[in-house]
Amino acid sequence: MTGEAMLKVIWIARFREGMSRDAARAHWRDTHGVLGADVPGLDRYVQTHVAGPLPPATEAPLFDGYSSGWYADDAAYVRSMASPEWEAIGADSDNLFDTPFFWGMSAFIDEHVVVEPPAGAVKVAAVVRFAATGDAWVAGASSRVRDVPGLVGCVLNVAGDAIGVEGRTKEIELGFDAVAEYWFEDHTALMRALASPEWREASADADSGWWALVEERLVKDIGPGARTAAAR
Picture (cartoon, rainbow, N blue to C red):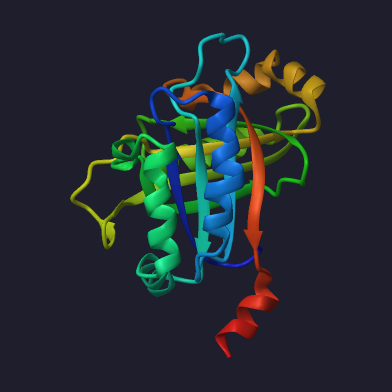
């Protein structure tokens, strides 16, 4: 997390049909990620790769991961989208992703850090649809998740406006309401938590979501000091 108010966006992704998961994840990490790190105005960039289904499920999740990006504000986002570096990463997207899937699955985010996650913890993510309002879902999930044994981090990302060609748009209907992120001490703690009544209660509002075990990769974080220097 950044520790300061910033604009956050999330792009939920599926890989291009016919591409092996290993090849796709390697391309995302070693090629697409390198291009993303060069994009001006993108102050923080995190890739979250789907590693497998969340037990006891055995079927592959319906998404392959998501990217999270942080910008100083909307103006910085718009300038970033106009840069040749962003054009390069956009051109590479067709080599890796099912790009039409991004429409309706990418949004500006209202981020709620319930429990600040540590680095290196085991991570679970859910792409969520909820029946209640966003405020009600956040309030309920925030109060219940703190009791889950072994949980060391929780961030609730509520979707706002969709991402369009030129930035925010209300013309695209979103296919999700939020991305919920949970961190656990280790794999043993995760498995114990999944069997607990506290987890069943905490995750009940996200039963309609796409759940996955995920691996997080920090690609870029220039830090507040670097942002201040760059603004001078």
